[in-house]
Length: 172
Ligand code: SF4
Ligand code: SF4
Image (cartoon, rainbow, N blue to C red; front, side, top):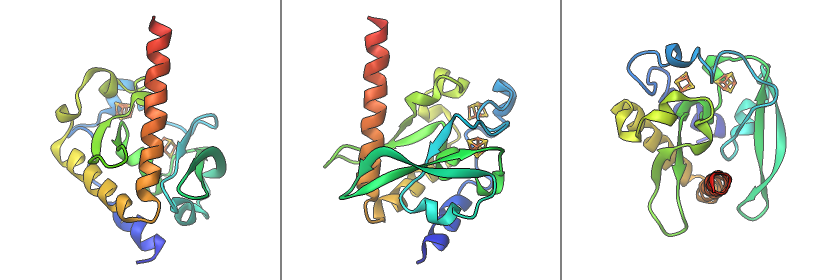
């Protein structure tokens, strides 16, 4: 399967499936998807940059986060939203995959989503739409099948852990 076919298929899991059965955007004035924010980027999953390389609603940059042997992760900064092409991280928001080496995959609330997302601040994962949780898990199981997919998810999990530790140290 080509990268394009892979991401078309994974993106389509979220064409009609969202965190709540109703539009959660009314709770926050569509905080995560109203307009593109040039300062806020979404990390791209492995090879996703190839699928989005011609997207005309943002730019892709390298980050300092590395995974696998030599991969540097990419970030997508949008200047507006193109809902039909929004990256996978936007589609699974406010959830994220969490995995430690040798441990099973978990689907957790993204700690970094709490700043803007009322769902992340006030709900548990299991309170979100069951089909949404199921599709996030399905998408992430597909990511795990990619070369470096597991390393990427482990890297994301470490970023989330560091963020949580930093938050705790501010509260001391
Ligand atoms: S920020 Fe959270 S509540 Fe608001 S639209 Fe995004 S996912 Fe829904
Ligand atoms: S592409 Fe993603 S980050 Fe950008 S506005 Fe759309 S949902 Fe938000």
